[in-house]
Length: 390
Ligand SMILES: Nc1ncnc2c1ncn2[C@@H]1O[C@H](COP(=O)(O)OP(=O)(O)OP(=O)(O)O)[C@@H](O)[C@H]1O
Image (cartoon, rainbow, N blue to C red; front, side, top):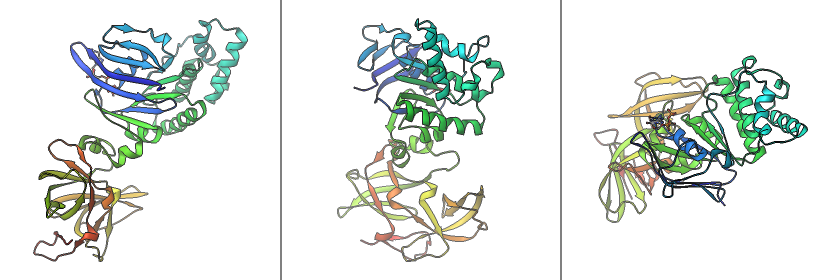
């Protein structure tokens, strides 16, 4: 039985369709991150699962029980859904001690005093802050307040924990620390976690699966590794790993010649195997900066000559920006690389990491590309071209 199942979930807010028919299955014990740019509907989806937002169309099923249905206008009370929500703002009561903040949810369940004490302290221990139990929220740092908010959410042993950008108010160092804590907590509790963030680094390091949203639609649900390696659309490819390490994009034209699939690009021809090349079409090849190596010599495999434009070094790694004719490319290298602008180098691609997209639809084509081992270097008038030899 899945932990959460959304079927064609639609939500309208003030005449606007904020969620456009979401189909999403979250398995028990998963740590699923809802990721996407600001305004794509992540928080709305979390609030709809929690029951703080009404569903207009579709169904939501939690642990086998229907909790919301657009068709029958059924809406189960949030308190009965077996979920616990932690907000971005910690929402602690300032006039209560940490202990009382956490105990509050248990007191209304009519547990005995000793049961409450035992559960509150166990929850504080899980968050590694038992010594803070008598303090007031105003006496705590941001990171400590966030730990208390999470301790309060787990004290009722919910089956599902919903976290809405819980780390966004913390500084970078604390955020890294809390990420590790959340990962540990997930491992130890085995609770299903649904986590909202627009920070892709956070999504990739924390989650068992990432759900990527654009404009109220779920575009891809995958493991972090698959999402990074095989983004389903160009939009997802650009979004994942974008800001610091821009994706390399090369336009091409795919066709079949003598039953061999070929993609012609300004950098040369690639041989393609796959079932997606039945018709001539404009395509885009993408390659991450770490999948392009730079060499000082041309080698035997027909590396592509490139000219260095600049180098951005951050110490542990360097981004080397180069040009191959009109095409700008970025390579990511380990260490403090230093090439003078204008220097000629030779680029080699990890072909198995190249993704191919239909330029018109932006969808990824199922295809495998081969370049160097099938391509012979040809010294033509245009030094950036190399040609196919099969
Ligand atoms: N109460 C509301 N009134 C009007 N519009 C709303 C309301 N809540 C959400 N919206 C709209 O719904 C869309 C999705 O909002 P939502 O907060 O779910 O996005 P988000 O992906 O979580 O964004 P962020 O990362 O900025 O928090 C936005 O266009 C937002 O303006």
